[in-house]
Image (tube, rainbow, N blue to C red; front, side, top):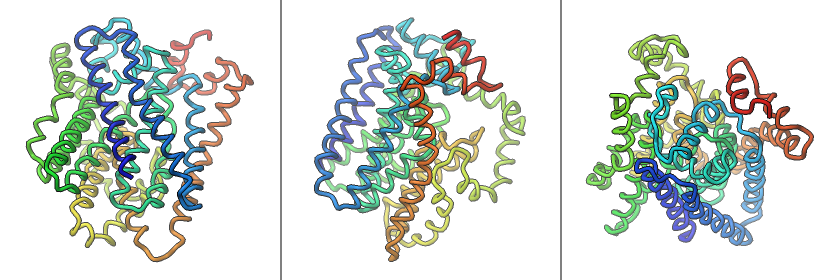
Length: 449
């Protein structure tokens, strides 16, 4: 138990270190090909974690061994997607071009025609390290590394509230979330953002669990750096500031001062080049009428407030499917309300979930990837409730739901195998993803390949 915690802490720290080095290289103009070697640190720790899981699994119960085998199978399916051509819209639109610019110019460069170059690019710069090695494939391998890290962080967070069996059920359930499935093999940064947010939450909870002041301060520093990384990776992560500020106020308030350290340089870079600290956010808000029914921010907020009665139904049937168990989150909150009042760790878990789900509800267009960490923490709340029920069939029901959600991934894996085994050409593979919305992107990226 202690070894897995230490390894997961080191894993998160290694990603933060990669991001810090890549960011410094981008700002100071030395983003050169040799920098990819820093990725050996998180990837090496991941290898050790997988090795340790294999060793420990021999001492587990039969049911837990079955869960480990299933978890391994799920991630082998996800790994297949790493080796097929990139087809994600945002990946082709701006994530890959930004990585190309960074590798060609050896520094962050603002280009007005690619306004996302003014985004906070902490997570993008880590993916760009992979691009330095193997271009798109390298970036997708980084995505897979973040996916596995998300599972490691989820497990450690779950173990604060749940026994081992239920924690394994939690990571299996998260592994079949649609966003986790496809973004663990694609150049999107939402899984990386979720890693930093879940790690930040976990570190804050560890501050409350230990009485040793030195250890508290170390965890508080790691929490602040993790939350700083998410602020440095996506602009609307600023909407998570209410939880961040509250979390540090109930742990170690002085570490609030660390929050800007990784993020501030990116916002200053945006101001220097565009005259706005939040250029991409302002552009997004200015174009609301192109992808929502509102033409102003107040109008959007009012519309979403009026739609709140639909909130809980949408939790059950999310657009990018997570788990139908989230539909009973309100029930879980009511049933375990006494435990929540008595447990500071549960209180922070609930507040984190509420803040995250508010981001999902109000940031258009609605997508679970914008608040992935909140859907994971919300699922943990549901599992806390179910794990305390007397009926013995609940673990089987949770597992059955996960297996049901695994079915779409089998079809995706079959599609990948057609390409990987040579029954489809590169052109045939990418052609099947074309539609009226993305045909220009695929053609401009792959052309006559």
